[in-house]
Image (cartoon, rainbow, N blue to C red; front, top):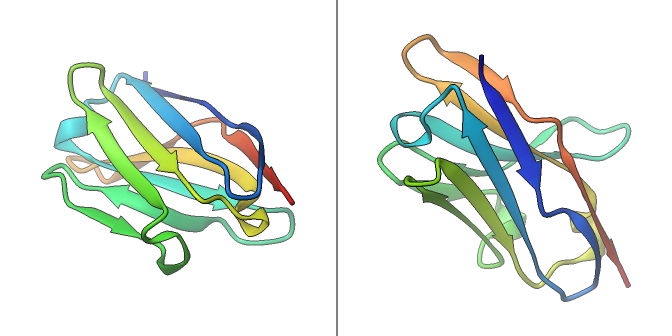
Length: 117
């Protein structure tokens, strides 16, 4: 059974930083792709960042230069370091992993990030 557990969300002032963590069981992150998505009420879920099995990273244009996705293989955990946060970054952030062997996607439960000005 695959479980993705996010942590690290919270309330932060405009310009502040947060680091989200996504710890996995039942799936090995460094042989699959892992993403961070975010969603606000009434809007579609938005892809924020990706780290592939080879370590290649990609970002939503609006977070480039502010957010960094990384992976700790020993802990089987993926992080999203978010700096220079803006109110428009407020959302529920979801960790998601794509198991490449079966093209099955798994989701965490989400963690709320709220940026106030």
